[in-house]
Length: 102
Image 1 (cartoon, rainbow, N blue to C red):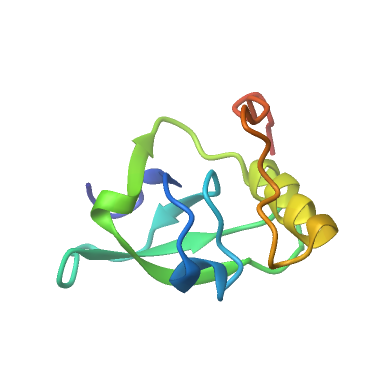
Image 2 (image 1 turned 60 degrees about the vertical axis):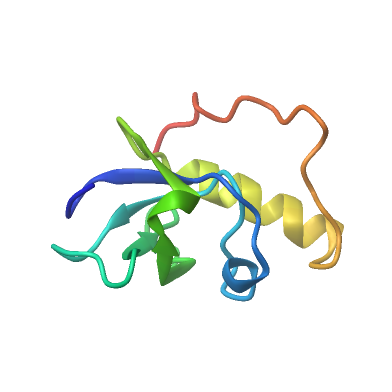
């Protein structure tokens, strides 16, 4: 991985959830190098909406994707806000969110 790569979070971890980042959210790598196996990743929203977070993510907890869609992040964020932070808002087979575009 390298700076400006688009990535998707592949796990749901409490340390990411505390900052509003959930499995399936997409972001981009902000720094040129990783530190202790972590990359600094920004998770934007569409338009003028504030970013969800810019946090360190373990390399093993994300995958490279060809294009990032901020609308995916907004959809996932809305699911968790509707369900409440203590519940898993993902169905057993989540919808394919890859078609969302900014």
